[in-house]
Amino acid sequence: MMTRLYHHPIFREHLTGPGHPERPERIVALEAALEAETFQNLDRVLAPEGSVEAIYRCHSVDYVRRIARTIPEEGMARIDGDTMVSPKSFSAALHGIGAACAGVDDVVSGAARNVFVAARPPGHHAERETAMGFCLFNQAAIAARHAQAIHGLERVAIVDWDVHHGNGTQDIFWTDSSVLYVSTHQMPLYPGTGARTETGAGNIVNVPLREDDGTDEFRLAFSEIVLPVLENFRPDLVIVSAGFDAHHRDPLGGLNLIEADFDWATGKLLEIADRFSQRRLVSVLEGGYDLQGLSQSVAAHVKRLMVG
Ligand code: ZN
Image (tube, rainbow, N blue to C red; front, top):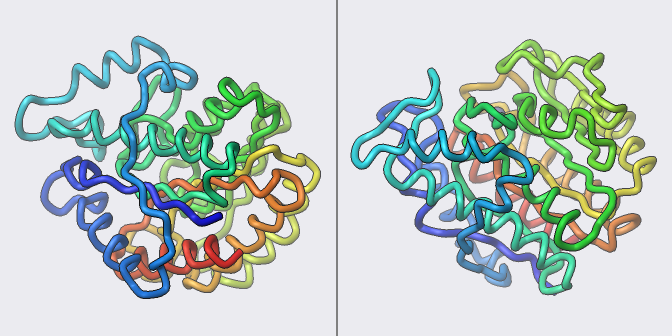
């Protein structure tokens, strides 16, 4: 079985305007990095279009309608201070959701060993009723709900190492102990949530890091908190909200991770998936805004997914 990569040209057509960090070039850069010889055995599949029914498991019907109504026929429209949409944005988001859900199908059926979804816009800031932080729909959350609704999996863990706290994922699962949300992130930083005291139904585990923390602090947090929490939860599926903006080159984050940290953390999550989840692991791209830091970190992450 191979590692599957979901990609689609539509992910380059969600436009955000000049100077916006969450830009189409992110996908161009990481896809270029995945062209290297090392990745010739990657199973490349075009992202299918997801269904709005899948979205309704995490967002309200009214919310989906509101987002659809903001999509302009041409040019760009602003949802909030930093969340932009263009004519292809809804379709791009639907393909991201389709890929995340198909990735779940793949690891459950055994069609793939594990999956990386190279989609944009990202999703983890999207709350049940609110788009924010470049995010429209919460792919990772929707994939978790899809796993439960369609495949009958009981416990799903979402591990989020994006430098920003995934307030959207936390919001969606705040009262639902069947989904564990565990996040490492810089604090204080956008969006302002993610304190240790935010625990939901006991299923939310926030591990804030401080500005300038790097390899040692991240790995310590992972080893002492993230991994034991996962072992205790015994997930049927591991979903990774894989943002790479904790990389030291990233312009939006102040952490100092290097590619080797993403390689290491990926290996640790694969071990958890091997032990508890019948190896099922689906990783969904979130942030990462320095093109070199992003592409090299994605390469390290996907290479580890491939070699186990
Ligand atoms: Zn981020």
